[in-house]
Length: 492
Ligand code: GBH
Image (tube, rainbow, N blue to C red; front, side, top):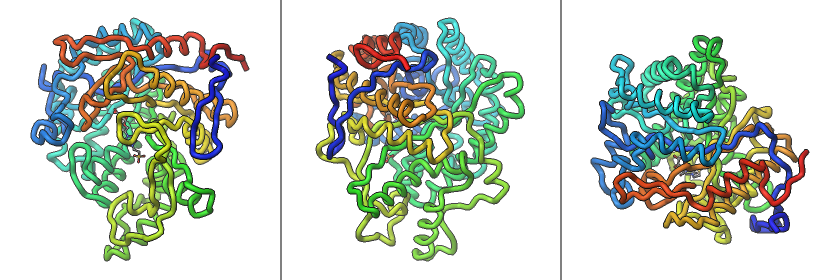
């Protein structure tokens, strides 16, 4: 019986039973996607080129098998079917993103692509007609290439350009959209895009460009929030948040060094973005590490830019809710030998991280099955940021074969959802929803079509990209219907 099922979790003594307390009746259960990963139609109806189009077209070795998002799930044409799948799941909400270059082909406000406007209007009204709440990400990694040519995120000019784009989104769609997210995983935008260069635009500027990027993303986020607050909130009455991702960083031992290393890593991954928004300014530990290292490296001042007191005030308090993407835990320990010359976020933090060999892995090299990390991360966030309203905006499991018999996905989702419920019940964490990644198998960025996250299988060889329900669809339907993760729940 389900309620006697135990999941084996961390290294030592951690066995956790699945939570058997019913979720609240108004808890939101949804599914997520993003524009570049599902839309296809990369150059149809006036859409402009974005940094992923450009990167994956010009450099065929960047992604596995040279895969790209040219057609992918073809959701630009199949959106009605996608909404029908959502309806079948019976989700409360659908998290999707707007492709900036589909609305504004050159990124700027002076040229609006009406076909793009039409597409998102249609998608949103189809969702509304089916009683599904749209949760809209304004930026999910697909910067118009024209804006990259003008400097991209490390250039401060982008702040106003993004603000114009965000205002346009609020103006066009805001009567029907009540939940906005300014950015998806800014950490990956900045660190993978402009630090290590593993994501588009593939620029390698570790320890420099990635921080300029973070600085501008935070200002752009705050500006969008203020625009909404002043110009739209009174009439539209929606909420604007941001989505931040992090692993749970588990201290490798209970030595004070390793505990401190865990805290430092949390500040470098989550605090970099959350602290300015919820508490004001970058975390102290980031400021001190990066300054010390910068000076030792010959820089005149810290490579981490500084906010003025006015900017600190302007950014603080600019999230009506916090979206959390969480998939994995890692082990963390203090580094014994400091690489004083090392450049980059993952050197500046001065810790080492790794995955335990004993943890089960998904297809994605960074994905491990560590459901016990969910409660720990949510609890840490609650304590750091004064218990913000939170929603898990992504969590999910990848395999290679896209099997319809996806029991591994089911137990992954079940385990992590149990962690969410534990955090609510035991720690009083203020979580109002959960969003599984992903509705569909889709283009998993540089891993191409080799990592499948979908609740629905997509046949990428069939002309209409046939969708087929996996076993996890039935599981998720049942959770949504019963608000319960086990055979029988107790109400509290
Ligand atoms: C998300 O990325 C994306 O939003 C989504 O588009 C994507 O398809 C989905 O998840 C699945 O990958 O050292 O803290 O950075 C999440 C991808 C998660 C990548 C965690 C790297 C490593 C841990 N990432 N991560 S961390």
